[in-house]
Every structure is written in C-alpha cells, then in structure tokens.
Length: 634
Image (tube, rainbow, N blue to C red; front, top):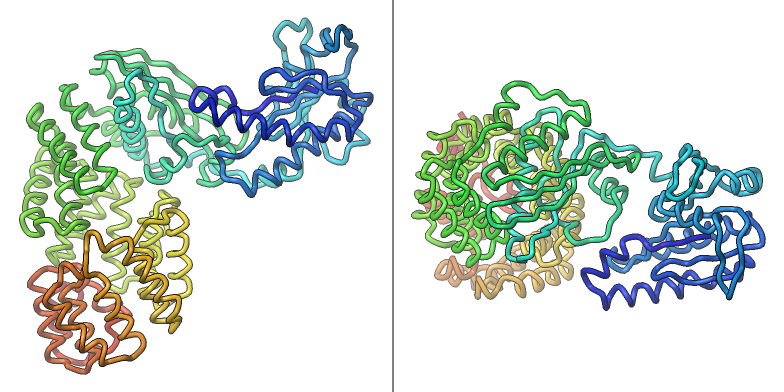
C-alpha cells in the first residue's frame, strides 16, 4: 500500500513550517491503523507511507478505515487544517533488503496512488480479484492504464466509498461555471492585482454568453489560497465546471495558463498555455471564453461573440491602471476607494475612450457617497456625468447601464431606472448587480413575485456573497416573514463575521419579534463595528429599542439628539418620520418625510413595504401624494 498527502508540495512552498506541522499530524493519525490490520510500515518518503500486508483484503480494509477516519475528522476541521490523502494498493512479489522492499509491485503501487481521488482508494486488477466478493463496498473500473516504467497496461479500480457515492449522486450542471482565482506566478508580489484582474475580466467576458451561468467574483474569491478539491468547490458553489489557472507577468510579456475541469468526473476538459505580449491580453480572454463555451457545448450567438471579441483599449498602460483601480475598488475601504479613483483617472488620461475606466471612477464616487457618506450630492453628479460619457462611447456596456439605473432610482425616476436594469440584464445576463438593484426596485413596488425571481438569480450567481444574502433577507423582511429574514442574516454573519449591516438588521428584526435580549446583543455588536465611522450610532439603536419595547419616553428623549446629529448617529430624515408616526405626531412625521423626499433618501422608496412604518395612516392623502411623486403609484 502506498499513501500520499494531497497538496503537500504546494503547501510546503507557501508555508514550510505549517506544512511540517500538518505532516506530523498526518503521521499520528494514520500510523495506528497499520498494526490493526497486520500491516508493517516499511518506510516514509516525505509525506508518503509504504506499507506491506499479509492479506490483500486487510490492506484494502486498512485503506478504507484510514479514509473513513480522515473523512469524519475533516468534516469538523477548517479547510486549511484538513488532512487529505490518496491510497493505492497492489498485490505482487517484493524483494526484502535491509528493512526496505524493492520490485515492480512497489513501483506499481506508487504509480496507481495518484490515480485515486483525494480521499479515495485505487487498487489494481490483482487486488480486485482477491477482494471483490469480500469487501463491503463496490468498485468501479477506471480502465486499463499505462503506468510509467511499467511494461503492460494495468486495469485499475476505484473503491466507491459511501460518502463519495453520496457526493456523486448529486451531479451539477456543467454549464454553471466557476472561474477560480488565478494564481500570481510573477516574481513581484505587487503583480497580484493582475492575477485578480484576469479572474474578474474572465468572469465578465464569459458572463456575456447567455447559455452559461457564471459564479460572481465575491463567491469565488472565498476560495483564494485554500486547499480545496474541485469536487468540494463544485458542490459548495453548485458549479459543474471550474476554470482555473495562473498568470506570470514580466514587463510587457504575459504567460497565462488555463484549464477547465468537469466537477462531476474530475476530468480535464481543456487546457492551454499562452505566451503573448500584454497588448494581446484581450485576445487571450476572448479565446478562453470561447473554449469554455465550446467545451461544455454551448453555442455563442453573434451579438455575444461581438461583445466577447471587442477590444476595449489599445493602450496597455491604461488597461494596467484600470486593473489596479479595480483591485483597490474591490476592497471598499475609504482610502482604497480614493486611491482607486486616482488609478481610474490616470487610465482615462492615457485613453480617454476607455469606457470601463469611466464606470470604475463612477463606482468609486458612488461607494464613497453611499457607504462612507462623502460629498453626497457632488459625488452623485460626478458619477452621473461619468456614466453618461461611458454610455455615449459604448451603449452596450452592461455595467454602465445598470449603474445608471441605480442613479436614476436615487433620483426617484423609477420607470427609467427599470429600463436601464432590464437593458443591462439583456446585455449581460450574468451581471450580478443588475439583478440585485432591480430586485430592490421590484420589492419597493410590491411586485414580490418578480422580485423573488431577481433575488434567486442573484443568489444563484453569487451564493457566498454577504451583500446578496442581505438582499435576500430584505425581501423576506418586506414580506413580514421575520424568521426567514433572521436566518438569512445569520448566514451573512457566517460568511463575514464583521459585516455590520447584518448585525444591525438582526437587532431590528429581533426587536420586531419581541426578542429583546437578542436584539440588544446584536445591537451591541453592530455598535462596536460602526462607532468609529459613526460615533453616535448607539443613540439610533437605543431609539429603535425604545420603539420596539413601546417606551415612548425613551423615544421622545432621544429624538432631539438624532435630529441634531443625523450623520453621526447614522439616522435619516425618513427614520425621524417613522418615530413621529409611532408617537402619534402625524403632521410632524409627514414634515420629516418631505425632508426625506427633498434629500432624495433611498429608504423613502421602501415606504410601501417597510415594517417599521406601520403606524403611518395609509388613508392620509399625503401618503398617496408621496407615492405618486416617487413613481410608486400612477
């Protein structure tokens, strides 16, 4: 029997100290099984064991028990601490000499071991003949294999282990693609932006193909640097095909390696190496996208092909600056966004016709405005001007269409916004933000069935995104299904423990459900995460606690402080209106809603579905008037 750890060599290159600790852990776990089955450990070879047994059946049973034990152990461990091995078993004569063994049998055992799946067991035909009617689980033939330094081809069988059979019983659609984070193989770690950019650009390019469903960036980046098998990743993302590869950049020369893997069979569908000049990087991306479609037998229609083959710029400097900007924009920190804006501005300076750089700069201004409260009106206007320029250059740019929809929605032009969202989805069905933003609009218009379609599409495209799962939670919050909304918020926290909007929303939901202790606990977590940016946010959440506990004295006491410090308490004019409705001061409440309208606050659009404004009299003519001006009613 020959065993070998999966991924040990790569781990040693990344972190030799940790690799040695995991190797020692592996040896302690595996060794006790050998004597139990009358096995004699001949030697260790790095991360491998060579073991001799008196019986072929005992060798196979030993291999099974090892894999069963590791499978159970790994299920309770984080991925970076999992011990995964392959096992190969062969029956044949060996020569003993000085506590070692030699001969073809040893060579064959070592050659079939790599044919096993991670966590699996492979045996030769000789072993299969001995155990086929005695071993508890079935075997599946892998066919005759020509092994290195072995004369005749040998039939190899794999043991179909119970957990493996369960995993394989649920196949996933090969047309659902996950583009895994491309590895940076450049000598300069600073070129990480280029590898991440290649990943994002390939996701964008392949998303143009209507017959394919492509997992979005947030979900695939969760696996960056992790030791995961194709099967594990595929099952978690429900992706039938993985595209993985690496990038090496040296000056103006780029080497890209890409390979496509069928998750259901663990078979390589296609692989290719590209050595090109940087100016040909778009041709590489286009070729990879077409090969992906061809490999899973999806036809690309002419408009899609045109978008895939379009070269956005001839200027490699502009493209490199654009990738650096996107790399920083994805981090979303305020300083990251400002630096990203600088890169996008330089890219535009290099190539004033590069439409994606205008969209990138607009995205920086919007996130600074929305997430960080920076220059609300000026950043809105800057973003709108930039997007208008981008669309004039390239009306087929889905990202520009979708973000323009968001801006129009912020201006309460809902009919125009819907046209932009639908246009973006038609252009690029896999563009996640178009589905998310459109779902918001539909929820606010009480078009719940249509909204759920968009929410499900977004969840399908980006299942591990905290942001997308929060949108799903808001759908159920609008439907007053608080239990489902709370469970989705809990999932968000599992995905990102520091995602403060989830903690704050759970506090509100638990308050609505009269789970006051839970509400206070979630609020404290949210306060700890947000008070650096919003120093008086506690006042906001304490006012909501008073609202939920029907403590009007607390609400009346805190309201003036909220009104005086709206930004520092993370309070909107709309929320002030909610509190006045609760206190029964209807005229004052509508005055604050008018302020909300004047300031174009987004949460005013939720007025029909918001469960925290239920005290508002819906028969009041002022309510109907607001709905008409918001384009929520004809």
